Every structure is written in C-alpha cells, then in structure tokens.
Amino acid sequence: MGGGLALILFLVFGGIFLGKRQSDKREHKHARNEYEQQRSNDDDRLSNWLSIVTDRELEISLEDGLYNSDEKLIQEVRDSWHYYFGIEAPPFYSNDVDKYQSVNKWAYVSNHMIDRIIALRILMANRGRLTESDAQFGIKFSSTADTRKLEEDKHTINTMFFNAVNARLKAHGIDKEMYASADSGSTFRRVEEIYSGVVYWQPMIRTAAWNLSQLMLNGRAR
Image 1 (tube, one colour):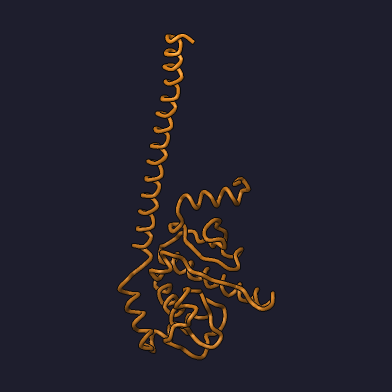
Image 2 (cartoon, rainbow, N blue to C red; image 1 turned 90 degrees about the vertical axis):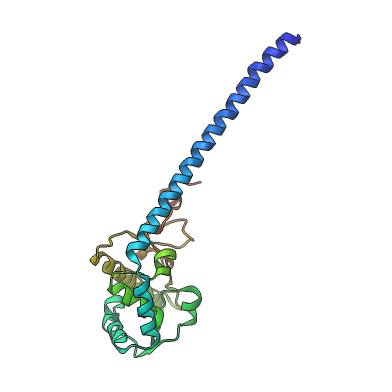
C-alpha cells in the first residue's frame, strides 16, 4: 500500500473514529446532565414533601409527652385506636419502645399494650403529619402469621392503618399517592397488594426507581 493512500485511509477512518468518540462524549455529557437534573428535581421534591408533612417541634413535644405517660395524649390514642386499626385499644400503655420498633421501625401492633412509637404515629397523623423517619424512609410492615387466616386478619389491620393515616393527611390538605414495595423499591403497588414490605408516598420515590417499577410491572423490563 502506497504511503499516500495509507495516509488518506488513516485520515478517513481516523476521522470516523474520532467523530464517534466525540459523539459518544456528547451523548455521555447529555445523559450526565439529564441525570443530575433528575436527581436535583427528586431532591427538591423530597425536601418540599418533608417541609409540609413533618413538624420537628411538634414531634419532639409529643414524643416527650408519651415518654412521660401524659394521660391526655394517651387518652387521645385510645380514642383514635379503632379508627386506625378497626379494633379496640389494648388495655395497657407502655412508654418502653418494643424491640421490633426500636430496631426496624415496624408498623407493629401489640395485642396487649399500646406501643409508644405507634402512639406517636397516631398523634402525628391526627394532626396531618408523619414522623420524620416515616416521611423520609417509609414505614416497614409485615402481615406474616402462623396461619393464612391470621395472616389475612393481620393484613386487614395493616392496610386499614395505612389508609387511615393517608386519609388524615388528605384531610389536612396533603394529598399524595401512597404505595408499598415488597422488593426494596424495585416495584411499587397498592398497599392492599403487598403483605410485607415498606410503605412510601410518591414524593419519596426517586424518578429512576419509579420508571423502573413501571417497566417491570408492565412486563417490559429484561
């Protein structure tokens, strides 16, 4: 191959290669910019959600009152219990936090006592608010039980609780869709469809996670 022709071929194919690299760089930069914008929008949405659905001073005050067994607050919880769970309130109140609550923040309902974390959730919901932890990270729950009948009963209670909390938020002007995920945020479904997982509200869900969920639920993800 002559030197002149080799040079021409090098310039032609080299130009194509360099042009492709430049195109790849532009596409990468565009994708990066889109990602950064999406992340910023997600952060802003979550920040706005937290600003309207949480109240740190209120939560601290109620938490302290429950720790000190404030009779007025405990009576409010008792009076509200049936609305949230469809059953009568347990006979005893404990200001100790159940080990399942302190470690995992489960939406846990004891048969024999009113747990302080559940009490705090009820008092906050009565005022149209969520705890800061619930509003940012979601609420874990499980309907697992020894028999299918007990499982269905527990699931009915869990579902009623979450829908009641959401209804309280809506009554205070905070109207956001509520979902549950059984697979660490890969898919999001109606709370009634999930027996164990985490409950989220729409502003808490990242756009990429939501889009992936829609693809998977529609059977298009591979």
